[in-house]
Image (cartoon, rainbow, N blue to C red):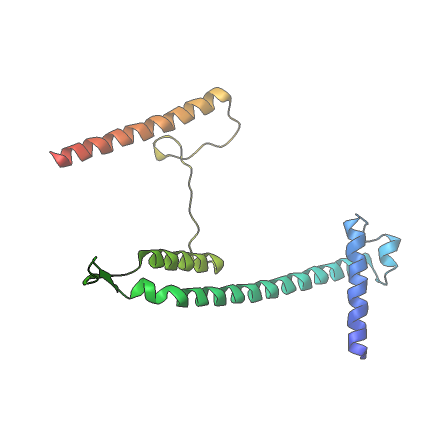
Length: 177
């Protein structure tokens, strides 16, 4: 083993022991941690940070490889159904005569699902924005709320939704007339 690999192996072993001791709740200035060869508690803390960062980098690399493999699988699946989803095929009547051409709607649905999966895998979709608002669209008051106040706020929300639904129905009726 080369000198560089030997040092690397020793560092990995020391960090593994450090992590095990820290999981047990052992303080950085404890003699068991200092006995691993650290000059100070700060040095041990810094080494733990490095170990965690290295682990994070390894996880990120593994996630990148996984994402790439999944994208390649999705590519293969898309290639398998793309023509059916985009090229019209003949539709025959009972006498085997061509009466129309249509695309395969199941294949289209499959393509859409594969595209949605790719977007989710790669984080392409925008996150859904949710907003809480108080009565009449004003700011929501946060703080301790009693059961009565909570029930009142909920009833206001229900009443507003019912009122809006009634207005929409009235608008629909006016459009038909």
